[in-house]
Length: 259
Image (cartoon, rainbow, N blue to C red):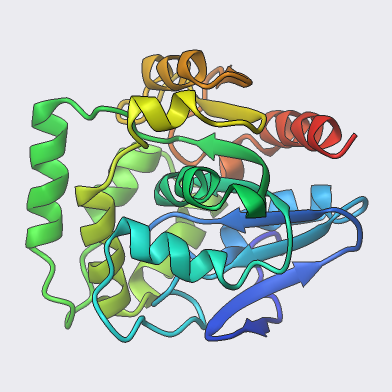
């Protein structure tokens, strides 16, 4: 039952799972997924917070933008739907968006957590992700086998099965749009990270080959109120596979942000 689909609310063209009352927490998932990827975090945070887990544009029940966006325009689109100042938590591409919100919309950002975020991709990794984006036609469903292997290896699990179902069910045009933004995007510039004025958590898995511990530590070192946390034995999908460690870190950050 952990990954069961939940009811949605409408946020002006974006759909979202909403739960709880209290200080606002916004959750942004990665490419090809949907808000249910945060189910474990929703359940952990809803007791003391108002949680809004958004389906990214073109994912879940959210509509596609009228025009092809870049990272900044996608960030602004989401910012316009956030009803107040929030702790923004993002995973993978959602982490790019969360950091973009902290930089471009500090009035909406009380704190930020970037999970499995990229920073200064090596040239070979950048070329590989751009090649994958270029191969998408926006019409057919992309075979998720290689993605699942990067995320989970060969192991079978309910988490892998849930991700496979979401990747096979995502709108092809939405997936192409989001992957294109992800392929061209990266962390904010060093100067922007150094100018952050909110608490910032950079968290990744010790077994993560793409959003590496070194990347998390480098970003945390730049942010004035930044810290890095590395989850042992975790890889890319750690919000799903290692929820106890992830939730403890997020609850600690929320307590500090909303103290």
